[in-house]
Amino acid sequence: MAAKTIVVGNFKGGVGKTKVAVMASWELAYEFNKKVLLIDMDPQANATTLVARSSGISNIGATIFEGFNAGDLSNTIINVNENLDLIPAAVSFKNLPKFLYSKFSEDIQQITYLKQLLEPIKNKYDYIFIDVPPTISDYSDNAMMAADYVLIILQAQELSLEGAETYVSYLQFMADEYDADIQVVGVLPVLLRAGGRVDMSTVERAQDIFGTDNVYENYVKHLERLKAWDVTGIANQDQHDKKAHQVFINVVQEMLEKIDHFEGEGDLDE
Ligand SMILES: Nc1ncnc2c1ncn2[C@@H]1O[C@H](COP(=O)(O)OP(=O)(O)OP(=O)(O)O)[C@@H](O)[C@H]1O
Ligand SMILES: [Mg+2]
Image 1 (spheres, rainbow, N blue to C red):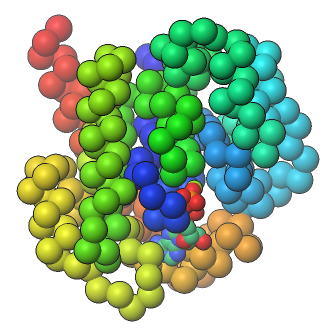
Image 2: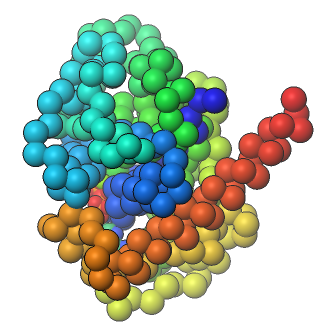
């Protein structure tokens, strides 16, 4: 069975997208024993750096842009452990728009290239996570067209739903314009600031807009340990490490229940 492909969405910078994409992939592989591919589509390569640092990978060979050039991603795949693979990014990927425009004349071809490249490798995985930059761009378009699901990040300490709402209206645009077929697999509240309280009015507004059931009961709390892992790599030694892992184990559990629910609905139609 082909992998379920998930993109982490929000059109705002620095809201925790990469952290969620990496940690959800990590827990799925290490704790849930699933075959996972994490695709880094951000030329800043934050996901690549974090995974490499966490697993002692010092030499990254071919990166995603070389795979795009070759029309084949298989030589870019790094085995992180027996369950987790990574397609790394590098700054070279900043040339993606130029590359797509020179290779394809139709915009539908330009935005479905990742989807096309994933076809031959999809069967090897249970889940594929895609980490994207926070822009409406060829990066996000390609991720949207390739993905089955989007996990939307809600900044639960902000008064504004801006990044999350923009994402959903753009999703609608992509569905109307290009028949994008992507299901929202929930809205995940993330707390980035220390000591800040959850703004309940923001969560309630999110529940109104996205549906009460769609806003996750589990929040990604602000944890200093998550920031520390940017420097040390992901660890699992002391109580603080375990607490940080548990946050994402809970989030993944909730996400899997939602996916089960959607897939179950699909069965009824068949
Ligand atoms: N729950 C958290 N608690 C504490 N720090 C966090 C948490 N989540 C993320 N961070 C930190 O916040 C910063 C931004 O997170 P991250 O890179 O995941 O955001 P992003 O949305 O991917 O950013 P960009 O838009 O630049 O891609 C990082 O330094 C990260 O370590
Ligand atoms: Mg990021």
